[in-house]
Image (cartoon, rainbow, N blue to C red; front, side, top):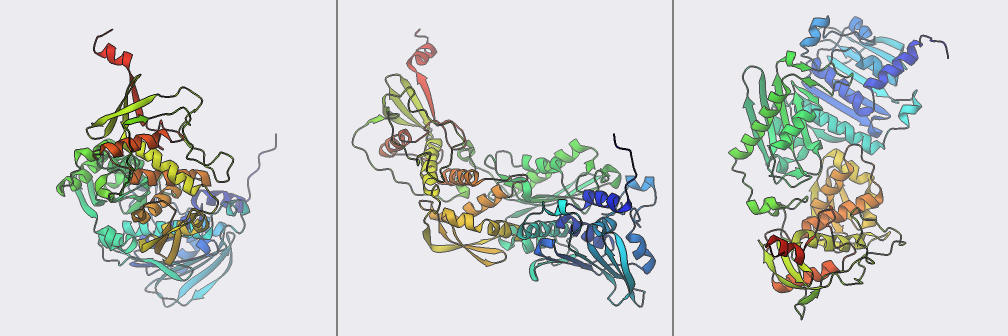
Length: 591
């Protein structure tokens, strides 16, 4: 066994830096939090190439004198706490004294700072944790930190960085959430010398939301407020049920002016929307909690994103109550018929009615599942073919006899009678399956054609969302999407894949963004094509509660019979239930 040795200072600092500095966004977060603790009213964040080559954070805070500037580069040197007792009542964003030395250990860092009472400022240049130059500097009161060549001396960390566009999107997302936490501070974010985002610093949370998401989305946000005595105050904004996303990333949680990751609060917000959103859809919300400092433990991880809350159950219940009160107070009532749908995008008031056409058939006798139904999918060997997630129908197994359409129930289910019993078909799930296979076939080729839109659609995105789409631009073009990146936050949809309903261009893009942006997801082409076809089918399919004529119902049954897998919808729900003659007889006590 090797002998135990004490690591040299450089290696120890690089290891410690790994806990604080994971990517460029971590650097920006730590530096902006330092600026906020310094009392800054304006903060500028400038990055180049996603922050991998250059990061500059400027503020007009209190600044530091020469002695403090030197101490700030030493590990565990801080002005924010003095002893163990202070850890139980932390009121600042930083307190560990690790940010600057950790960043300096894995980059080339320049610190310039000046107090308001000093005639001149101080600068220090640090490379790999070592001070290589220092002296006086001319600058306005405040601090400027420049970080260059991040991870230049830790190639193992650098090789795991994403593309500059992706890393820049994550940085922009952090700056936005920090601006939400402090709406009284004007923040500006610039990427490759182009301004991406600027908050006005008016002190109004809704102004920050509008500056990032746009005024149209801001108008869909409802105020939230709940006062639970002297220990908890809840404020913020939450979206109307018509405003939803495919993941929880757009639920922002702020506690005591700090952006945090809190599954507890996020789940409490989502719980308030129970029955108001389709399955797999989540609200857009910004919830700010003010709690007594002794009830919040931020000393959980060096990154300070994870926190622990005392009285968790009471906090969760209060958040759900506050959000629900905002929804009820605005008379947001969802009709009962809508609640019967369980697929994403199935609420009728949030989606335009898609015209449908079922060709009339001459006879009433229909073959629901013939012995050899035609294939609607490309053969398995064709390039681009996507295997389905749902079980594939085995055409060599038992076949179903001819059945006769009887009628529609509720109106949600189609009833058909056959020599071996009763068949109950979920009309939405059945139509989903039919459309899914149609869309999947359209997307299966290596270079799908496009249907050009008569009226192009402008889609307003966040910087992160736009960069995510841009990173997959070629792939989306291969599917038939014709996109123009009009500006850094606006995408114009000019064309869609063939056969896709033309009125849902924005919905398709947001579904794709939500899918790609899911934490920990690395989707393949096949996964994304399946997801897109399934989402498009769910949006376009007839809904529960829609009446069908006899011709339409019989045509739907015939199309389902021709499907490659007629037994489930793309999400795995059953399309058909069979009740045998024997089961019916047993129910009526005939045997």
